[in-house]
Length: 365
Image (tube, rainbow, N blue to C red; front, side):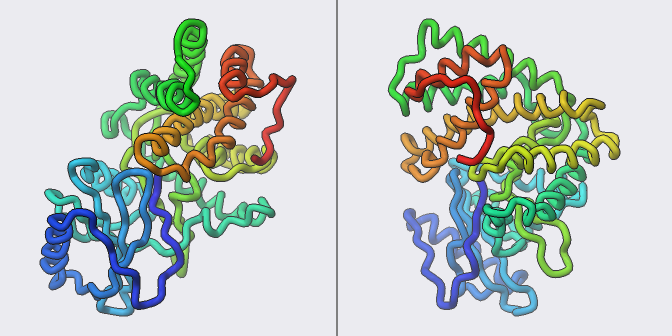
């Protein structure tokens, strides 16, 4: 999940708390060491955001008012590996995307100084009540996505292969069904899940591979400002090489926001048209492509339901589980459309304790 910075805080900022005195001392020493090359107003240090991982982000003002502010990533190396962030940031910058520039990095301690892409995410700027008011922002996101996919090369990023897809799917029975709902996953339930997961993996691996951000959604996109017309892109360190359907599914079937299907179709069709014109392997039949988007979206929503249960039960972050009804709605709606997924639909209905119905609306939760 992404850093989601609030609007700029007034000076003086709230002091940054440290649970580990040794880490605080290491941070202060690092800050003192970079002060000469990157003049900063250290007294302005404040929390910018925290995310679903062990990372957090701080904001600090530059000594030169024209420079604005900087972001500091605090990523304990025992829990977080910053190397993928640095490598993917370089790949994205070469592809023409607007990503944070790594200005300084203490790899041993997990501290990183970054350029600041702004205070407002696309999620914060969205008008939920008027979908068309957000059309321009979504089309900017589509432009960034296509630029990223056009840069794709095999053998650069980890493959989004069968093993990884299956491992992610198992988060749903392991964490959501067994631990959150308290239901044993065995017998017929296990067989049903195995059969459904086999279909899901096969459908998704049938699509050509490109670079996949893996969490390409409004919380991870910053509003373009000033002379910059490109949205800022964040939280890309888990990028892989996998199905071309994935990132547009992430964008339009969001973890934290649901649109009516006419708006989803509108933007997805525009993506497909632009991608096809650019030579990306999206196929000649939009209906088939949209089916692919639905199937990869199902894989993602099963995974995220499991992740959100794990964040609550293991990591003490219950706020994420509040969005679970959105995922169950996505899962049930997709399963209701495809014959191969009807057994999974019945299973989810049983887990949720709901009556089966003849069909599902895709609309808002």
